[in-house]
Length: 176
Image (cartoon, rainbow, N blue to C red; front, side, top):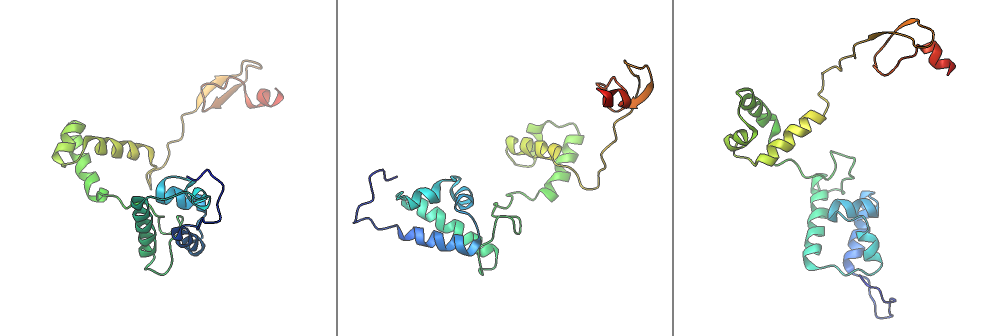
């Protein structure tokens, strides 16, 4: 990045004009584009300040912008909120692999053996299992917590609560 004052011979990088036009067409902010394209929120701001861009970075930026245009049929770039954003599609067909993985795990195979059977990396299987534990399932209802019968420590009245940490009845809690 340039630290010296911009001299009279300084000419902005032509790539910056292409990026600015892309930002205008797509509606993306400079920060969002920097994160999506380069994983650097300051990238466009630094280019505006005179940052010099390597050839490999130029190729990467061009591919990102070309890919975004292709996702929308070439008409205009896609904003990150539309059509699933500019995330790369999954390398694996999880709709097909999840049942196979579940069947192998149900047989009692270890994660390493499942990965070997599916010809995948062990870490990929572990990441998928972790993701599935975190992601809420469509159609699955949350189980309501069991109610606990308590006696208020203050007035000795009987009441029911879901948390084992509540020891005062709602009336006494309201008075506190």
